[in-house]
Picture (cartoon, rainbow, N blue to C red):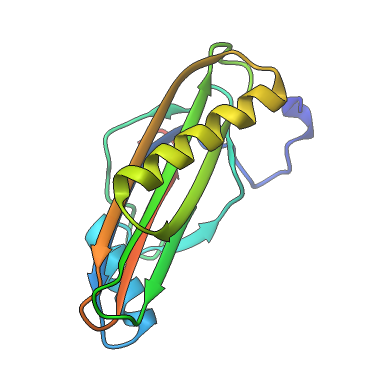
Length: 164
């Protein structure tokens, strides 16, 4: 899509980072909130996005979004009430060789290990590039797992920024 067709007031993100967290909580929402805090994005308003990495978007070190800011994020999450259950979440960013083309983000959560979940989400990203017939430069990914004690939650995400 050409820049002249971008909607006014909705800038295209220029940076991104990956982060993940897990936690226990009083309820599933409390566990999710604590997982967000553990990942560094618990004090902002997450705006869930679908799965496109903007062209030319640069991977940066994680930063703390401003308190209360509207923060674009693509994420996978899961919660469980089953003590002893292991849950995992992962995200992967497929970056194209051509920086003028968009990349793809895939999100995945399941019962099991972080290693297996990350392997699956990375393959999902590769498959998305095959469908698009784009050359792949690299894949960045992150995963998290959690063994539930009472009520547990996991969160893996790609957080977008604007030149941070």
